[in-house]
Length: 289
Image (cartoon, rainbow, N blue to C red; front, side, top):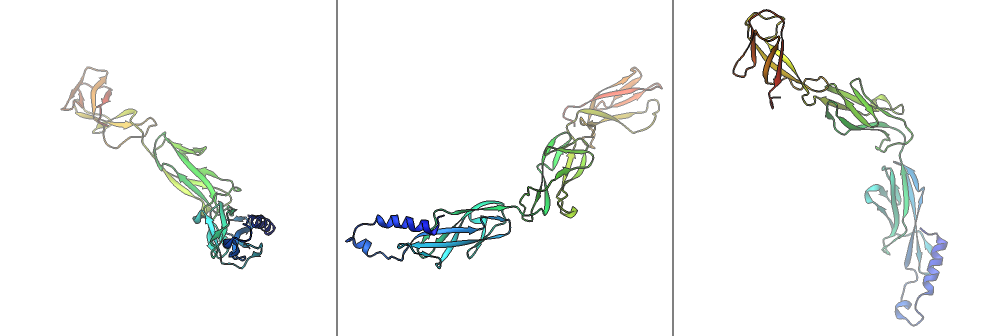
């Protein structure tokens, strides 16, 4: 971008460099032809959603500055702003360039002006969860920020990602160990409750870490020689049942041992010939859970 005075000086230098008289091509040149285009933007820093006015000027071969020309605007990148006449409007925080173009002369300012767009005031908060479903004990990234009405992050509003009991969020990372679904919120005093971003994090059971035995049928006490089937329930490292489906078991044993009988096609049934209290142990069948 150069001023009118600078345009004239550049043109003066250029004119000194033309061939001497007698060159037919030079003598036939139009002295009113446009040789340079200049761009000025007021203001060159705007709030998202606001407009800036672009002032275009052209210089002729004689150094005359003209502003009443068929100008258009070239915005880079093109999607960064909306152009109406000689006005540019952008809702995207960041920068873009704009240059005036003289459509008749087919000349574009080769020193475009950079326009800076800053976020507008706080409008709502945004919460995103990288992995909405994780296994107990695993982690996922959580992003929380306050944005203007166009979605641009604002720099002047405080915020924090909050979660109910069962989930912790710290340093942009969420984790939990209890199976369930939890609603997370991006809290900020700068926005109303209705405009606070939320997201749901679901925690699922982890891998089987231990086996919990279940007796079928369930009873407080059993009769002598009553058959009892033993099945397992897989439990993850945090005490969550891995599945409602039973896990096949093997290697049944009882303490104290002696009066028990282990039977059945899968050797998963047991009965006792004498009264007493017994502790039954078993192992999960490999691949059964």
